[in-house]
Length: 83
Length: 206
Image (cartoon, rainbow over all chains, first blue to last red; front, side):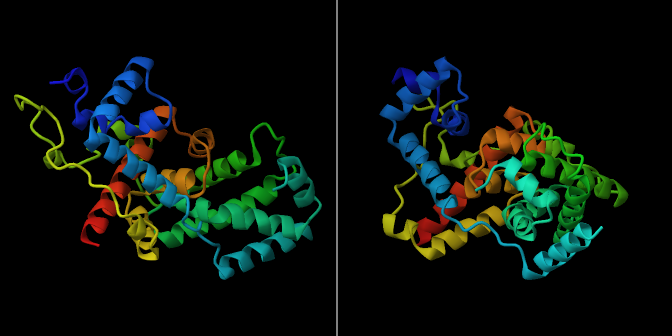
């Protein structure tokens, strides 16, 4: 058995992925995390899927304002301006 | 995009195009954040519209101590909280201020071997398989992703939308939602984990 599996299981690693990607892991944990990823295809595959999920979210088109809401708000702006 | 100072000058001068641009940029996010506090989409839309009136009425007093964006979202939060109280809705403190209190696993426990497994404790029982590139870029996959985001609890949906769809920084999201660094990360983690799981189950069938 490898040292990294003893110190950080796959089940524990998946809970640290966001902290890792956010650069919020303490140095010791970051080293353990990266050593584990380097040896474990399951976890490196998981990390890759999360990266793909984030990239794909970034390609979604942000929601639009409805024409109705925009109309109401621009009307409110004109009325504000005239006061 | 123009600076806050330029935008403020334009708004105060009554420049309608500057106001319209600001509305297009932030209104959908305002509605999403309002949805954390109020129970219906219609109420969230009303809160967002009321926010813009608060912005216009406060323009002359705004001193630029925070960014324009943070200021607008603070106005929203105040209005949304007042509205939630009026509607007798319990404020989602546990969802926003203490999300870690209710644990949630990023991946189903049955994907892993037992923590007491003699040889591979907590190791993958069923590993994630690489996703096919062509399915990943398909329009249907994006639709499934958007649907998975919509299905999230409102606080998680707001955080992932602002961070990953709109591309805000973690500081911007923390300031707009008045979240601690840790709670912002917990909400983001849960949101991303669920959306990944939804994509995985979709792409496995594809």
